[in-house]
Image (cartoon, rainbow, N blue to C red; front, side):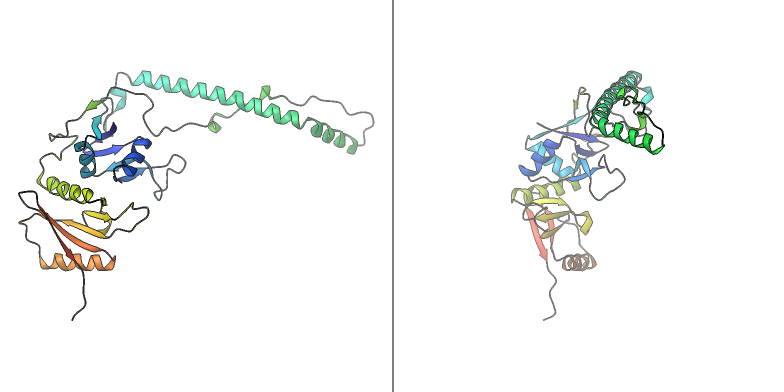
Length: 286
């Protein structure tokens, strides 16, 4: 079962296997929003977690493919974690793990250094003899043993630290009822969400890939295949069935679609759940 974690009304998937599965098997794309451990300051290529649209998350939940959960020990960004009674123990366990990792890396580095020095022992001895001869001193050079790796010291700031991309310590997870509106999942029963979800689900059932359309000024972008291989063909704008649409909005939508070479779809849902699509395409004067 795919686990979708909710935080302040947003849905995230942390497990890489789940992210790959929902894209390859269920045509749900989402948006990667996490920084890469090796390049945390760039924002061109992002990593886990995968943030899902409310409509994407609900589709997975409604199909029985996922469950919506929260971590009872997780706290909001503004909370003081030192108030957690388990926090001191977690800090001590983390520091103990760091020390064990450091000692292991120190041992491995010393062993590797000794192997390298042993392989270079003859060349080191020859170099010392050459320097002795260049000084003009007679006799045999004083033979000094090659320094062993026992005195090697690894600076702590040079040790490698693993940055996990998901929670390493499993804790009890509390399931969230997505049928009821709450602080964690406020979308249940919202008119705008219900309209957007009906349109999203209908397009998804027609075989399209549907993603957020915010970067093109729409509600959804509609792809004929995986967005890694295809450009979007449509920009979907969702409107209430009885809501009036101004002429300026229609002209703006038509120009937007023409500029980005996509067809604009005006989408609406009636009380019976029937969805109407109206396409806009800019045409020259006849």
